[in-house]
Image (cartoon, rainbow, N blue to C red; front, side):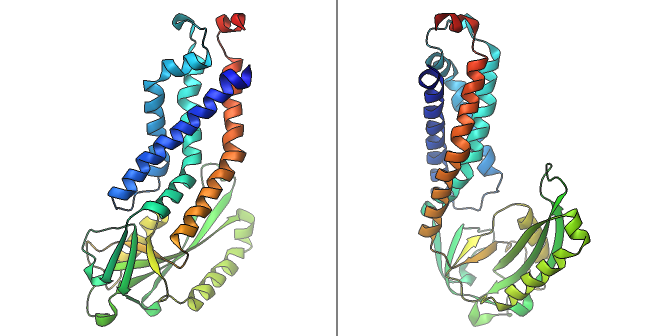
Length: 298
């Protein structure tokens, strides 16, 4: 009875929410070719899930509690639907969104990086004529807490940013975009006191020096999060900065189809180890707090 009346409807509801959110996100990345902030991947599924649950709340409740009258519905099962289901959708969706992004986002193809206009921020760029000089790089090292629940952990970031020019007129113009390189590792306070982050920093610098910074197949917009904001500040103090040309990219050699498949597999893995147990917990809570009228009908 538990699996048929409560868990299965919630399972189908979660699949439907992921499907609708994925369809909406597909339209967003396909026809609005801009680099969206990272928080969108969290707020987008939460907002759509809340809207869907609000519109179809009574239908969902009567599927879970088919013999229950409206005046017998209790507040707690409703709260669980409005809170836990959207949160679970938000946890599962980012991996699926990345798969959609790599598979369906529009790729802007340019003959020269000079053709990239001010204020234009496509998600993916394929450029024939571009040039980056490692000697024009700006490095920075920062330490930040990983989250509110970091438990004393700190993230050390080693960031490098370099201007992207056209190879035909390098250094004679301002940068048309920026190539960012980020190395991050989490350390405990004890490890920081022992200066283990210095070894990580030296290794990051050594890796960057060996990298072929002119050999990438295409550019991918750097995720718009905390590191992106730091990169923007770094670009603004560079000698070749000009307002309006603040696009931060990272070089990619991995085919987008491969990355799309990878993130979809990760989504399936996440759904198996987080989604299904999460649905079981939600279903268990709803069953525990089910209205007394429904208990009598069972």
